[in-house]
Image (cartoon, rainbow, N blue to C red; front, top):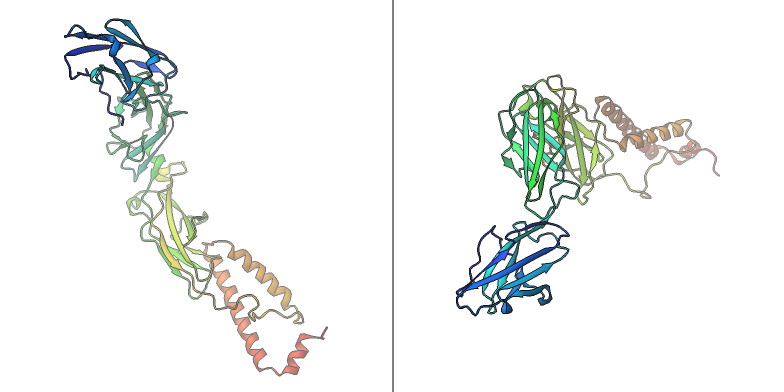
Length: 400
């Protein structure tokens, strides 16, 4: 069990002896060596270095790592040190023969911080600013490293320090208010620990260029009549931006109930409804929508996608058509010109069903085609039911 190592705290033993470890609370680079001593003095005068031993994080160190320098001093030599096992420092302790603690030291072994990079920021509804960053190429320093997000107006103003850290992860900070619009900010991150400091490159941004919204509310998914391969999706624009001059585009993603793989629909544009086509009959689908505001007050930036809305579930109707080999009615080769036309239409349908279309024109074409096909099949079935067998034979053409 590793205990918190307190900087510079003396470790008093249960007996009358006292001791001093030197150096006290050293900080070293990984791979370094340490030469330390434990010097004991006190009453009774018979206390010597012969019975002393060392522990590191509660584990007794091998005797060959120590040597007696004189009657009251025990030396320790550690080579090629690894990073500290706890950021508060490793516990290096000098013990008396009976195991009591005579003195202790915090041993810090690690790396200086690397230059933070990959700073990204976003503003929720133009009211705040949240930023996150990557701590460095390797990240781990084995020492407590403090990260400070600094920001200021680009052409004037003083440096400000963000105060609300770890809001969206370990390396993030949130600035809740008092932000200026129409003026660029300079933003950077400073990293500091016991072995040094590093500073990121400066990110320059305008709040209007990094706006995001809440996810679209009130997402509704419903069936499209009896069409077994389609679902209709409707939603409401995020209300927080309704008074701002902005454009919005949307994305939809959906998956079947027993899958973790989402299919994304990118071509929704700025509509607040869409029809998903090419779905499996009798299947439960989960659907989510997100929003990207762009063009706010004339900004030329692409905008930032919101989080996805909460999943909304709906199921497609079960197919009433027979499956393969179940008596499905197929076009007959002897019918003049109808075979090629129907084949072309079936190809058109197959192409449509593989995509989710959100334009009214596509809806109308698709629905007209479906209605025409249903009417054609119904007429053919009725004709075949009432025509005498001889007449049906003539329509099919010569037997082969």
